[in-house]
Length: 145
Image 1 (cartoon, rainbow, N blue to C red):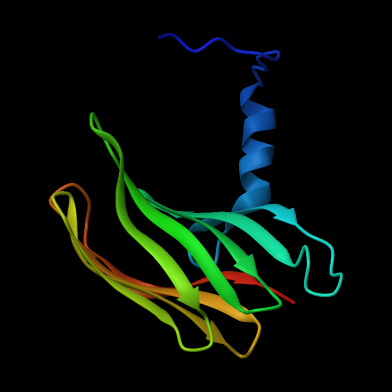
Image 2 (cartoon, rainbow, N blue to C red):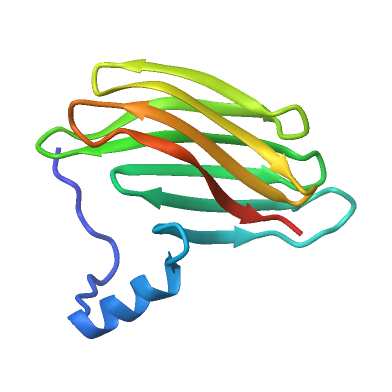
């Protein structure tokens, strides 16, 4: 079944695309961050931040509940000629940290999400793959408040 677009398709020029990418790029560590939605604070309801973070072939998409300090998300790798492959689902309490092993055909290693300084979410990665260079480092994802 073919997908049919329900809205207008927008094609942007290279200059506009460069400007949009520049808004998301963090030069200090070579990562990209887009905060899609930041809900209002109202008695614990709507305290969610939805984000996408990228580094090289990796993308981490997640939702943070700032009232509970919990996160649920997924880590994927984009592999040429194959597409996006799910490396891990990540869910849990940021106060204690969320750690998972990764062992899929495109990569192996580990990922750990944790809270630093009480308001910053960081991702620790150790990944090896035959499809991309080894990735090992600590990356700041977002500041939640």
